[in-house]
Every structure is written in C-alpha cells, then in structure tokens.
Length: 124
Image (cartoon, rainbow, N blue to C red; front, top):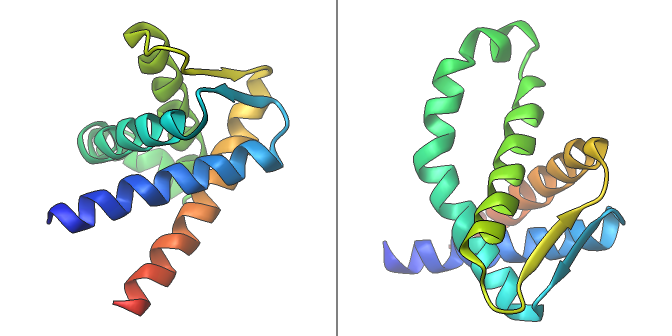
C-alpha cells in the first residue's frame, strides 16, 4: 500500500511536469519540490474528493459519454492550485494563465497519467 502511494505521487508529479512542458500557460516554481507536493495533493484529492464529484455528476458523465470527466479533472487541477496557494509552501507556486488552459492541462494531465498508470500496472 505504501509503495503504491509513493508510485502514485511520483506518477502524478511526472504527469504534471509533462503537462507544464506541453501546456505553456501552466507555470510553476519550486523545482522538484513542487512536483512532489503537487503529486501528493493530486493523490489526496483524487482519493477523497473526486469520487464524490463523480457520484454527484454521474448524469452529466453519462450524457456526455465521459467527456464531462475533463471538467472534473480541471476542477481538481484548480483545487491543487488553490491548496498550494493557501498552504504557502516556501518557493512553490502554480499559475495557470487562462481559463481554457485548465481544460487543456486537465486533458494532457489525464492522458499522461493514464499512460503512466497503464505502463506501471503491466510492469508489476
């Protein structure tokens, strides 16, 4: 269980790093410390908050054939940005310049994270 949590944090951090390279409006400070903190926050939010959001928005997810999940992922990304801003980690920030960048970033993050988890599960 502990090993899985560490791997999830690292995969989230790597997916966020790739997202910052692909989506130019997603800017961070803090180097590797940012990716560890953000990966941990993503993991916590995906474990605690996202299941409730999925349950509440199940009709929309069904009606859009799952496309509404991109909106949920964008909201989780916004929550990560909010938590990092409120917690005031030293030299760690996340800035997303435009609103539509949340959608693009959540799409890229989701795809990269899915690939990472897919590869990890098949290499165990």
